[in-house]
Length: 325
Image (cartoon, rainbow, N blue to C red):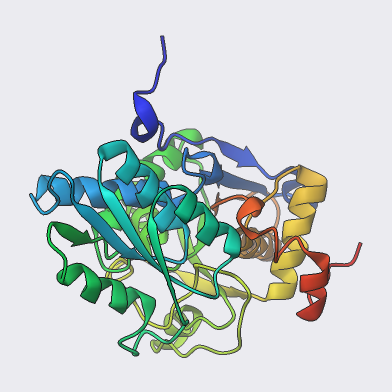
């Protein structure tokens, strides 16, 4: 019998899906790690679990305690699920600019949710910094600190990377993904480079993020803006420090939206905004490299968490992003 022991045991071991329309179009094998099939619905279930287990192992989180985090949504959702499964309370500080679907879901899961204005990281009222100061004032509470807590990237070094290596029989030419905290990108990159140093690790970045600039010039200078949520950064997190980056590529919102609708209409995959960046970057790299390469990326979460924006044609029209059909 193959039975998972509760929510936590069901995290990970997600399938690798060939993205047929993009693979056929480019002559490359473009493969997406189906992280939307984690029980909490996103790639962030992995980091959330490792962060909580690390705090427990260090004696920082005791029975009845509270997990506090500043999250754009998915890590908060993963933490809320795991807190329910383990008997902890959960407090999430989230920018008010994030989709209503994610905010509503956090509350449905029983988390205490505080929405705050979206301000830069240098501002003490930035959602990440605010969550840290709130946690420091509470009894029996931890700050998950997903951006700078290395348990985040360890989750992907220990699980996601080895899964990708096994699922491809080690035949990977390029690993590419966008990054917010740096955990997924860094953990997988560190693992794959140990296995085969010739694998190209490429960072995908939306406009409005400084990481593309950081890779190209050494300084994180953001330019432009993006409608995507939970990815991109104006600073280099501890999770990203020391991670191998062979190159970086930028994907504009127009291309990300086009990719999302192609995934939906040709591949049957209903995906969230960061997937548009990821698959857009993978497709661009496939066209640069030419046929015959295997490129792996992440299918982070489903489109249901962004339905009121990305899959609302009236909203897209106000942003000048209505895809041609």
